[in-house]
Length: 151
Image: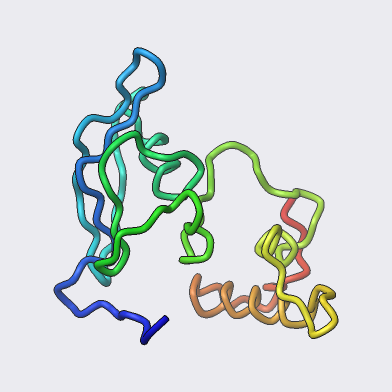
């Protein structure tokens, strides 16, 4: 398989080229092209019906584009089959959380860390969730816990 390719400062992390998508007679996306570079924070803003959700669903692999190509770190990819493996996730605005479940269960739903016997490694999932809350999100309070209920 070779050595994994890592992006340089000027390379794109993600590049969409001439993306097109239609739903029956409705052309949702036409020739959409953009790039995301290392260290960038990108916002997608537009009116209702502007197809923001459509491009996000294509990028997260929920649906495929009718035309165009997607590139991750310079390599052409089919995100419908590889988005999750590449670390691409989407949080939708609709309710999609297990509100009576602890944070760690919501973070790892559908992609659990497993031990050598194939069982869910609860301790590791809790550790990673707490690390994400404290280090990635900057939540440092005494009451921060991976066991806190979402609701």
